[in-house]
Length: 371
Ligand SMILES: [Zn+2]
Image (cartoon, rainbow, N blue to C red; front, top):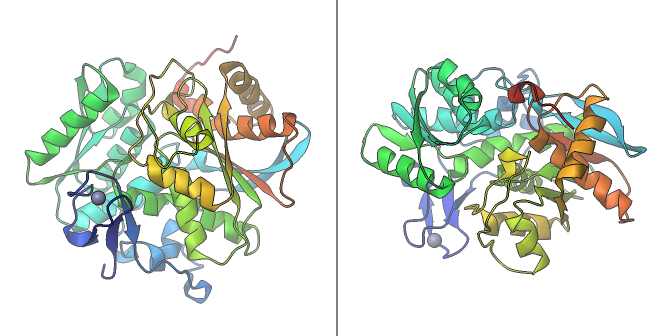
């Protein structure tokens, strides 16, 4: 698709999307996309009940899309700690997590570029999502995962036909191994949900849908789980597509691994790596997120804030969600926990709707027994 470029916000480098690698070759930072960003509501495709209804601001044409019907998840009213909220049910996407949005658009893009094999590093929802869309696209998928990953978490990716290789050592070492494997094979692309800018462009569609579902306006605040940051950065990309006022973006991380929270509270321009402790919110356990700078910018530009969630609060929130019929995995409860924590601290909430994004299905965690 013409008109799309990648921009490095650290060193200012800019390249056409079609010839760009997965990160800035000059300084190694993560790219962000620039393209036809403004959304013209007159050109919405109302009969297209998937995220491809926003084709005009996606980097891949709908005619080239690999689709499993992703998008237009329900927005339903509920309550948290006695306050009315709206839940965005992104755990109802085809593989059970919001990652399908990014995977659908990224796999479509890389298939158009002629790649036959996609290399991924993930231990969870991203591996499942990318493996599923590779299966739908008839592409090979090779997943590199930490050796400590439980077999149950990789069963879904294997079921879609992905080859899975376990790697000893840190999460960063797993990523480096995947990057080498992709570089060594000219038919392969590194399809990283944490690095590739096209993944974020798919993810931004969740907030475009909310805008439509609220009758053509944004909510006043959005509460999101944040690990690698595609949900958060995608939300800010959606804000760039439509007129304001914009929602405050509130990023929730587990206290056990909260590099973004620390950097935000210290007023720093980028995120420094942390030594992560264990947490039930495994999907947000990213100690050194590549898009730290972009995440901080999204929160600050939206006038949002951050919340670090301890394990007791996470479990208590998970129970509150389950008892409303919302069976989500622990990582997906972070946004709801952040809302409750902000209310409990007496933080003034902006007037208008608060939207809580529920990102992953509880069916993924098997029999999670809470104490
Ligand atoms: Zn750069």
